[in-house]
Amino acid sequence: MEAVVRKVQQRVRKAREEMERWDDLNSSLLSQFSNAAAIIARLPVLGDAKNYGVLRCVPNIREDLLGKQMESLELIFVSMREMLVEFSGIARGLSKVLRDSNQMVRGGSALTAKQLQLQVGILPTIADCLDGLQKLSDMHQAEYAVKSSIISLLTWKSSSGDLAAMRQLIIDQPNIPKDEVQSIFDIIFADEIC
Image 1: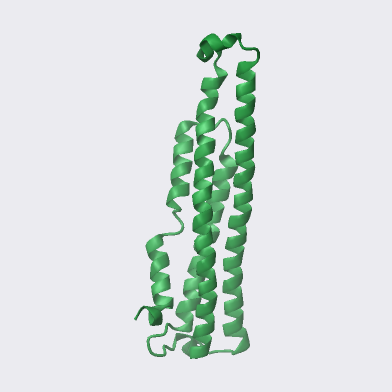
Image 2 (image 1 turned 90 degrees about the vertical axis):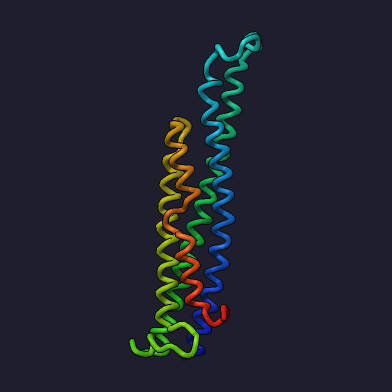
């Protein structure tokens, strides 16, 4: 029983590493989103000829500036879509860790429901580990869906109110409550905390 718990804990450690990569990626996404929002906010100002004053005498200044900003915005959009691919990979990786752990526990040793609930010392039960992995996987799948929706809705026509709401969702990551994640890790790694 202890050996099975240790194997599942090892898989959870791998999941935790992926979640750390997720957090780093989220910081990058937030930075790129902020850059995109700044450009989107500038576009109306750059599009208005009266804002150029004496620079109006420079041929094509308005078109050139708008063109450069749109190019930069498109590069940011591409970068954010690439980040979404990485988020998706992490979410799929967490699902794979869960699937492999379930297969290892239920497929290989054919443990009974009672054995899954059996606690050895301060080690978590196998069921606690699998339930924790399930929650972590579900959280990240749901958060990936939110991020994907946000990025797909972001356009150069997005309003400042929409941008603020989208940015807040990226910051908050509402589907991944940090205290719940920590609680899951505290249960799974209870033997290491003591």
